[in-house]
Length: 289
Image (cartoon, rainbow, N blue to C red; front, side):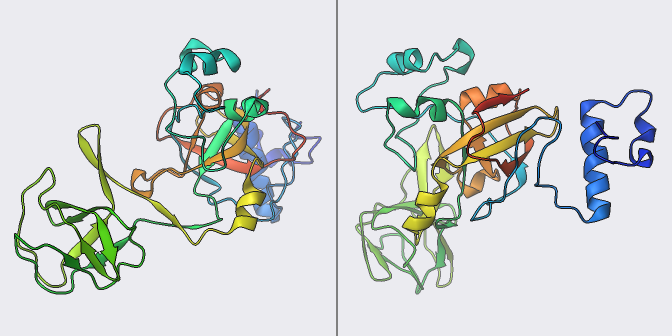
């Protein structure tokens, strides 16, 4: 295969007498890099046609995690979902809280739902809003004036130092209807103290909330159901996935996630690195032999 692709033996001689699949990939990538050849033209080893998308992938590599299934129709039980998609026991890890960023889905989308990928796609600005206090706030303060609250939602949670605060409304740069010391203790805060939005209390811990601002509908429509080849860097296993969901939150330090079937198809582990490439729309979803 290396000879057929005109890769000089100097790039793979050290791997002899037998070149493994992973060593093959290393040799090809090194040769292409030295030649200045784009590495997204094709995958000769797997006969998957890698293509260039109209809009770039958010990342071409990074950490992933196991996601949950997306609902395929309103009112569906987890059991009926698993039956509809022939979900193996190893992939029955629960259902996500909605239809996904590009939903709602339907029965006809079951193949995409089985093998989907989520990333923070480039149809919006993905941020975890932060600002600073404008003025001192006492323990009994009823409102928070921020230097800028434009990226904050109308209600939610914020953290100032070690205090969590719930607010029910926003007017300009002022957060109102406060519940001070939410699952924490009220405190005095000084002018200029950092205000981080938006926290939520889940599973006994606080998590940052990532927001998608300034969405572009044309871009979002383009991303929907585009196909992405995901390669596990550790074992070189590959799976073709569909874009059906967005995320994860920025605070996770991960770039994406995979449906249970896709995750298991490449024997993945949470927080391990994968590579991502667009592939031709005619490519079959699922594991790549």
